[in-house]
Structure formats: structure tokens, C-alpha cells
Image 1 (tube, rainbow, N blue to C red):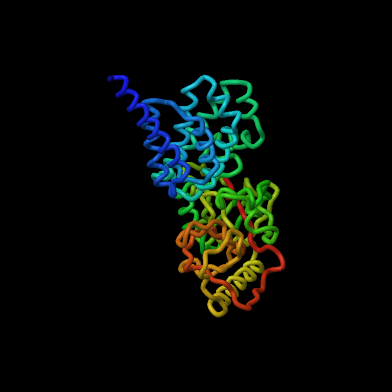
Image 2 (image 1 turned 135 degrees about the vertical axis):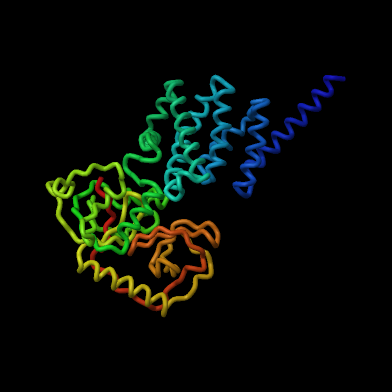
Length: 385
């Protein structure tokens, strides 16, 4: 009779596993999906027997956009699958697991720009990136097939950008604390700066903030001025305040004012329109451009106040709208991402705000033209040092 008991147990077990793997495909929310994946993890630790369809379902989840907790559970299951069989790594590589990991990492880098590293979500992203990079490292030590997949251009570019996930080579965002400090030192202040050409451009800076390439949202209609590296000073105090020394407490006391002016650059008046993160800001240079910038902001404010109507239906990504923000004022904006009525990510081409707003903030203009500038007024800059 014992064999009957074992047979019944096996049948029940198989039915449960089949049900859980089906739920992976039909879960309506990340919360439900995470609960199902948690059950699967517990079950696989007792009996790591993965059905044939598991590979495809897990790889699909890496390609999709999910919360970091879900992705971390998926990566853990894929790691268990690799350990369960000597041929599993090759099979997963053949079916595109390395490109799926790279896709997930790139999405993670974009989302990490919005979270504080010390928050729970920030820690989850940190764990996820470290786990994914460790998996890529293990694949690099297996077969020649895995190595060939790893040096694919897209995968390799992602691996190189993940050498230090908090400070990628092309993008140094600083921290949330640094951003707050930079805002307190620069917004609303009359500054001067030593302006030097930069090899980066606005698209490079905005890609992590938007989570996508800017032209995918704005098309060819948004043109930025040249990007620069700027060494900022506040000359309103009795003693000139060197902004980067205020940001980095360990900086030396040597006279940077003279040393940086020896390079290929020039002194300019600087107005900080917006701080993007702890290392990048949006600037308007010179009093004439500042007057044009302020006139444009006033025109948009007046148009939204007198010639706009509330947006009723959810907008689509790429749609140009107006935002009536209670603290930032009114501005034109492209819709970047829509996640329900309360989470609409927008990008403002005139002042470079990247903000998430509810539907109630969105407006559309009615029979009203705006005096758009003939040349770009704002420049995306990186702080010197």
C-alpha cells in the first residue's frame, strides 16, 4: 500500500506544480506573481524538477517590466535550474538567457535613478544587479557557447556599464542626498561658472532618468544645446563659494579657481533651471537667454491658466500635454510612461523636469500658440569634479 501512497503524493505534487507554473503566466499583478514565485522557490528547493515550459516562462519574465523583488525571484529560479543539470547552462544560453539578463539590467539601471539607494526598493535593486552580474560571471566560466553569447555587443555593453552599478562609466548620478545638497546650493542663486566642452550629450544623461531613449518619446522635435562640464561658484558671499567643495567634503583646499581656468573653456553667468541628480543639472547661460527662458515660462503659465482644459482620458507615451504642477508651475511635457491614473511619468522639454504626476495635473491647450524660442535655451551639464 505504500506505493499507492507515494503514487498519490506524486500525482498531487505534479498537479500542484502544473498549477503554479500556469499561474506564473496569468498572474494579474506583481504582488500575485511574487507570491506564486515564492511557492515555486520553496517547492524547487525540495525537488528541483523543472518542467519543459519553465525555461520559456522565466525568460519571458526577464524581458518584461517587473518589480525588483519579482526579477530577483526569477533569477534565483534560473540559478537553481542551472545547478540542477550539467547541460542547463548551455540550454539557457542557447535560448537567449544572457540577452534577457542584459535587458533586465538595463531596465534596472533606468529605474534606479528614481530610488534612494538606502530604501528597501533601492536595496532590492542593488541585490538584483549583483546577483545578475554574478550569474553572467558564472556563464563566462562554462562553455565556449556561453562565452560567445556573453561577448555579443548588447550583452557586453551592459556588462561594462554594470562594472559599478551605482556609478556607470557614462553616467554618474551621485546620490539622493547629493542631489538635495546641490539643489540647496544652486537653485535660485546667481552663479558663475567655468564652462568646458563635454563629450556626453543630453540623450546619455536622460536615458537612465526616462528609462528609454529620448527620441523614442519626443521624436526629432526636441533639440538641446551643447552639453558642458561646469565648475560652479557662488560669488554673492563675502568669500566665493566653490560648489563642488561644498558637495565633496574631502576635496582639497587648493585654489581650483585658477587651475580650471587654464583649460579649454570660458567664464559664464549661470542660471540653474533644474537639478537632474547629484551630478547633472540643466543650465541657462547669459542674461539674454535667461530673459527668453523666463518669458517662455510665463507664456506657458498664462496659456495653461487661460486656454487649457483638463485631460480626462489616460494619455499615450509620446503625447505632448501641459502639466499644472502645484510646486514646479506649469510646463509643456511629453508623456513617457503611464501606470494608471496616479503614476504618469513626464518629461518637460522647455525646462527639463522629469516628474511623475497624477492624471489630474494634465491639461491640453485650446487654440493657443506659444512663442517657442528660435534656438535651444537650456543645456544639460555635469558639475566639474
